[in-house]
Amino acid sequence: MFQSRFLTAILMVLVAAFSRILPHPPNFSPILAVSLFSGAYLVDKRLAYLVPLAAMFVSDLFLGFHALMPVIYLLMVLFVFLGTRLSKSVSATKTLGFTLVSSVLFFFATNLAVWLTSGMYSIDLTGFVSCFTLALPFFQNSLLGDLVYSGILFGAMMFLERTVFKSSIALSRV
Image 1 (spheres, rainbow, N blue to C red):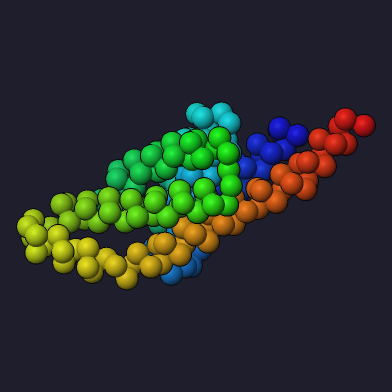
Image 2 (image 1 turned 135 degrees about the vertical axis):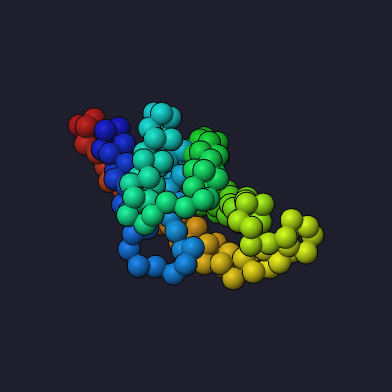
């Protein structure tokens, strides 16, 4: 049972991460959900960090590299860590809360990095407000993507644990 649950979790992470290379609205991405899910469901914590980061890197090979990659990869590490806190008792309510908080944190951290490093905005209050104001439309897609992908990943695993994996435990005891 453990082996099939583990392989299912890895497969779900890889499929979601590679969905980045499919056509999609700007910022509608599985990055956050994949990271939280890996932390919550991959028991081997080395793999919980390695699998989403490796999948992200491979998809970046197709999409191209960019200046925010270090910030995004560090955020992924943070979100895997947060997912390990979620793993103690996964529920729909806690998953929603972790997703919302992480989504806001991602928005703030990535746009702070853009403001500080891109050269597109003056490094003063006017530039800061301008950067974050212009980023708000992208936050809508980002938040929607985070909620959709988290819902799919966590919802599918909760469903599988209540049906398929529960059934395999019962069958192995017969």
